[in-house]
Length: 185
Image 1 (cartoon, rainbow, N blue to C red):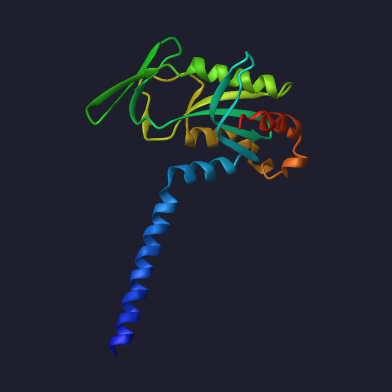
Image 2: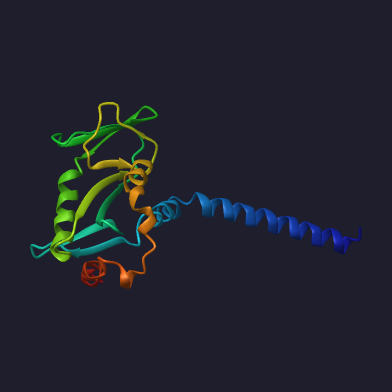
């Protein structure tokens, strides 16, 4: 093999390695994984946006999904480890690798977000969930609004056959558009 041929082979091998690493990183991207999962049971989604809260202020939402049965507000939490959570607890805690963190009970803020969406999309079902995206264990149980990605997919799986509806022909298109139009720019 000539020097030019060997150089071309090294360049090709280097490009293949770079492409493989890029593809691996692209596939493991947590945001992409969520987007792909959500698309299996929702027709549309809004991510990381602000809407009026219905009381003269504004409220930030992590995610809103349009499903055949209504709208789903998701608070996305990437806490991992063992989580101790309860509806009546002011603080929730998580332990992982010997570290312990506490965080405010997210349920009251989730309800405020659901209320804000209900003000904009009147007359349709709006539900809220706290979505834990990392490896999480709840040894003492958790409130019904708390879910994992696998559990959310399973809960919404009965609606999967109806998710690929053109947005303009979706039965809830008018309510969805009222939320989209209210997004604070």
